[in-house]
Image 1: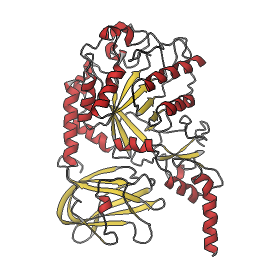
Image 2: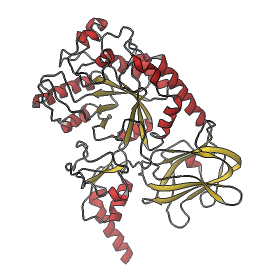
Image 3: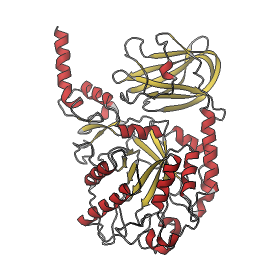
Image 4: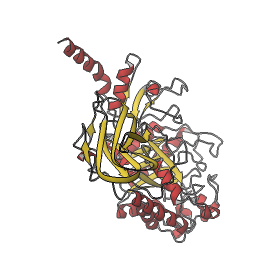
Amino acid sequence: MKKRIQLMLFVIMLTPACFSQSKNFVRIDKSMSDEEVVNIAATITPSVQQLRWQRLEITGFIHFGMNTFTGREWGEGKDDPKLFNPAALDARQWVKTCKDAGIKQVILTAKHHDGFCLWPTKTTEYSVKNSPWKDGKGDVVKEVADACKELGVGFGIYLSPWDRNNASYGTPEYNDFFIEQLTELLTQYGKVDEVWFDGANGEGPNGKKQVYDFERWYAHIRKLQPQAVIAVSGPDVRWVGTETGHGREQEWSVVPVGKNKKYNEGSQTKADEPPSGNNRGQVLGGRSQLRDGDALKWYPAEMDVSIRPGWFYHEAEDQKVKTAEYLKEIYFHSVGRNGVLLLNIPPDKRGLITDFDITVLKSWKAKLDKIFKTNLLNDSKGIGAVKKIKPLLDGNDATHISFSMKGNDNVVELDLKKEQKFNVLLLQENVTIGQRVESFVFEYYDGKEWKKATEGTTIGFKRLLEFPAVTASKVRLRILSARLQPALAEMGLYFDDENKVK
């Protein structure tokens, strides 16, 4: 009876924090014990929008605009609109190139820092309507949106908050101007799946910097396109902290937000406030960091990188496109580290993605398809405590096997039925329940004893690990540390004959 009363009191104590707020955002306070905070972190889950975004795995960035024609990366907003004239522009080619490479969503730079708009906006004269392209009657945003709809690819927009052309930048009126631009983009082109803001905030034509009204912008997006995720200066998706495409070895989707003890960058008490605090540390959501904010939030990382050295097309970089092998490494270190890869593929002055980029993308896709063609665990059987392993092999990330972490209930042991050669491990958690695994080891039986093949920390939505090739007929996964009861959703074992890990 005493234990029952204690349990009831514990549930009552948790109720205000855990169940009266959003499942992906919970405020914490000093009265909570360390155990309670860890348990709260373990039960925070993605929103419907965030889960859809995570499942995309790879999204594409299309940097295109005035900079394409001037050779710059950051324009000053003073270039003549007549310079913009992509005579062979084919948005369908852009989107099909992305889709053929396994990319499931495309984000277009509708306006970069120079303020030049790729749609015939009513808000400014600095747009395609005053260019010679299609006699001023063209609309790049519409062509990309239409191509995405036709080919079944998600569509997103990048709208730079920094505008080096608009005279109202640096005044309260600019926030109204920005709302008008958002309204056009979110009401004229059908469904928008992602709205992408960066944090660039330099001077405008009047020499002033703008105070961005992000919360107002977020609310406007929620109203007009409620299904859209808002990244990365946004409340749904955070920037991983570099532009290399490489995520952390330990990547938590649940992180503290708001007033950071070390950096003291403000307080966050609502889910849709602008990001604050340091997002570039080695670990953001480990046990020792969970009290570094006012709240815990499902705030997954996006790893952005360009296929070229620059973000916009430059002819001098045609021979500097990343190799298929390096893109494979980036995939393993982004998607394979609990993130989503945002890969930039910039069209050239013609308005086409070049053969240099397309050739690499095709080779990259073929390389990944070859690696993951056959899961060597498909015909295996569970031995030991876990015998029903179907949830791990059904291709459904919302089914799982739970582990109590008591006694030996932390092991999946598998009989491959015959000796197999392998060097790639895939693991997934059911993140609709939460991200919980803190460390694990994967082992093989050499006929005499169990030996380590590889090990890791977090899993999250997906973890991929490469290791020196092993040949064995029995393997096992041991979860060494976790928050609450971990839920393993998928498990895969593969052989990459080009794997150079030694």
